[in-house]
Image 1: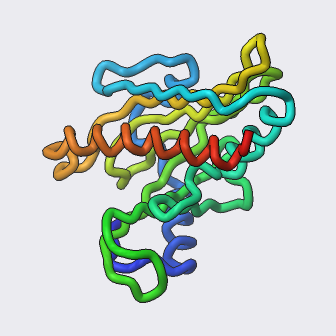
Image 2: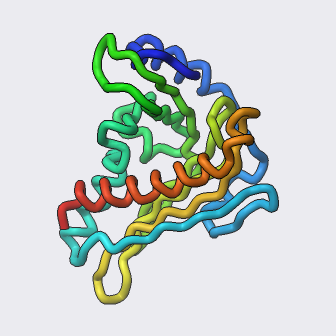
Image 3: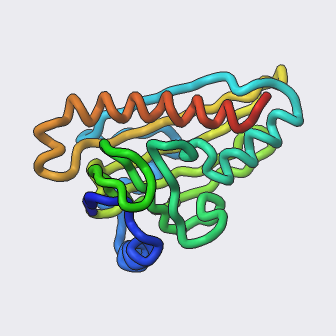
Length: 198
């Protein structure tokens, strides 16, 4: 869904309600959990060190659960619950600003992208979730957001993806879509590390 102004809360709520009934836009749901990639997709991985120690681990988990990697002027999360990223099956909507300023009555090009939380990971040294795209997203595929704690106590953020352009015009712009996804991965990592404050 493309807009020339940021959507109103009512528009977002209606969009979430419509998206809630949709199935993911591809068949291989959950493949990102163990790092598999369908033949039709391109894969990607971005891994960064968040910090070290138990306090860092807990802060990083809270930041991931709260979607802090989406909190800045480029991406803003909208979901059907206060913590949609910690509930399997939740519909999560991201508001993407392609260009133009944020704020009320601000012109620009914005889009709403829907994703479904497909699985959760909650283990002593691994924590995260994976979500997959719903119809209308610019790409189809999955992203896995995973925190890992190694034997030395270091905390790592690992983002694994597989996807391909979904809409006709985005297929023509596949190199740009790929570049945007790589930039997005670095952005997610930077925001999560900042939010964890380790």
